[in-house]
Length: 505
Image 1: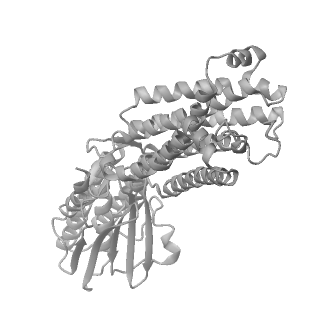
Image 2: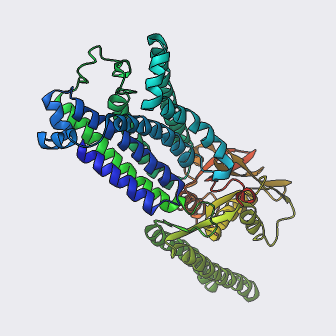
């Protein structure tokens, strides 16, 4: 227990000094500091006034020498009382502050009223249970009144802690950026371990060491402070708390490396793409298809050369075949260049991008839209920002829209709409068309590499497969709904980085 206290104290000081400008690390350091002060006060109280069985003393102090050192320390009972009270109040106050800052990031000036309101009860607790004031209160208040105040105090501790944990879990479930969520998960586990150990020992400790009525409320024997734990259970609980606490400290450390960049428009993040294997398959598949097509045309040309058709007719057919072969070669070389440029990139460079800018960049790629198709676009309100590799994500949206346009028969009055909006912490980009639609048994296959229902040398069936990989690389997902003869709807779900760029200044 003594080593755990020292380790967590060192961690809180390190966080405070090295990450003092970071709100999350600041609050985490205060949580650890409050835990350390209250627990240290309780250990000092036990060392000076006894009450634990010898085996529990071994867990807390390791040996009699350390206990005797604490026993004869110059710390007074008044100082111990203040340590327990101040530490307890700081722990609860910081716990709520951490939950607000870590899981509901806002500038301090916008939420200072929450912190001010949160400080009222901790300050009242420190004042009321100060030895000077509390001794005076005992002289003017009867037993029932102090008993009620004690339960109200414990009620405040329980409700505040449950509220903080509830808010943390609630916000954790709503986090959509996965690389935040993995760090936050371990931070939450560490905080939970601290809370459990604190409530088992610290919460059950005396509210005020001068009054036996504020001691362990769940145990009838106030003369012997022995929570019902075996020696093994003591070691397990301390070890469990220490390990999870250290993991949470490391997680908050990593989290602050990203959090300090929140709102900075120069943030960049690399995402690895598994393109090598797909690229090899695409090139092999594509070249094979094109060579087969040219082989068929050459066979037809050879047949024309050995027929007795009129020379002019044969020459015209041969010329047509040569032109087709030339066109296939030209299209193949162009397409191979495009694929090479896509697959040679194994990383996405994610940085903050205004959604309006992203969508406008996509629309600008359309040099000409078929006359039978009307394109409708609807940008989201405000100026939300996402983390994106603009070129790759633009190409993805563009390809899906091209698929939507090509799905509409030339004899049909077509409509393709791109509608974008925010839903909770997600940006939804919805691309709808009134084309031929997709059969239900094909929807599961359309994202498979090389799957295509288009009989053309221009389409090699990798567009949607690669598009899904790009969206996944942006921590997002694609959903498809389609009905043959009615049309299709593609939904791209992408996590929002900043909900409104204009409100971050």
